[in-house]
Image 1 (cartoon, rainbow, N blue to C red):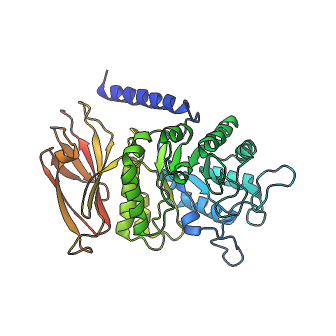
Image 2: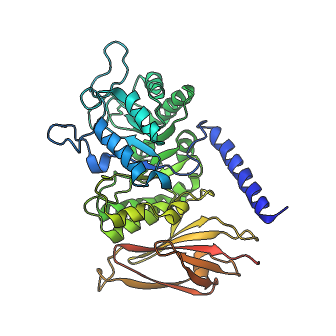
Image 3: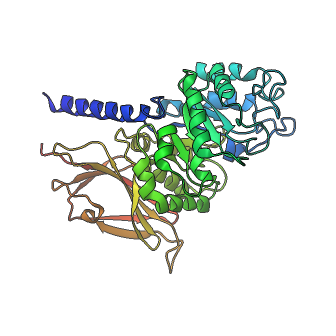
Length: 423
């Protein structure tokens, strides 16, 4: 059998095995790779006054405009397919008779079936926020408590493809019971819906073995902010928990460090590269939060970098980790496809300069590392390309060779080391 056919058959068997493992719990077969899309919250927050702020308010108009831009600006073509409405879309009370959730009548005058159809007709998928507790986190809407079956059915009737379930106002609610129960109600509707849980964020000692059986992705860190300190804090949070987090993530169930804040106000170009690279390394969902109408061309190019998206979407589904820290320098590594003919992985590698190096914290720093120290042991070596560069071949590096890179402060360099075959 040709080698290419063998590789294809192996990947198909691996995917089938992982799918069977997944459906034993969640039973939706979704999110085989981390979801890509857009969500408004960090950029647009909970602006509801459409008279004073017509462009920025959480409304039908904002989401229709964003759906248009996801397509016309090329984001959907590279994989950003989910348009997810966050908090502040609801009326403050349920329907008096049916007890169903209702979208705000003034800001969503044609209802969510209309908006869902509009999004789907663009070739996109429709996501919606809810809360497992008594009310949503911004106090605007009623939570799911006591209405799991009704709310799941309502979402299915609106043709929702992705549910983000937060965890505010949860007094006397056992999350280890509540989140699985809501997920079961989603499954009962028969409509496939990605299930994004905030479950572990609200617990001191989350049971990830249980969580991964019931959620496609889960928040483990604070809400992201448009600042390098916030990105760095999330990276550190992941690093502290990475042994546990990497153990439980894979196809169908992913660690969620929150949204990509590229394209807003405060994150520099170098810090934007850093967030994108690390999110790809750890196999995170790539969910943008920005105004697609005002994203700078250089940031748009980053967000649409196919080589980096390919790392994030790698079919092996092995999340990476931070393997080395010394002062301001960090190395993050993720095993990726392709294997060579003797089964050696290829790797995506991010070299990070946090920017606190003395005596010059604002200076670029040069680092070197022997590849074998990173666990790269393929004697035939690795071909290297710069994932942020022009994709040219940077040469062949053997395990005993030094790799040298120069990294800007609060920045990153990002490479793919592809295992060389015998022939």
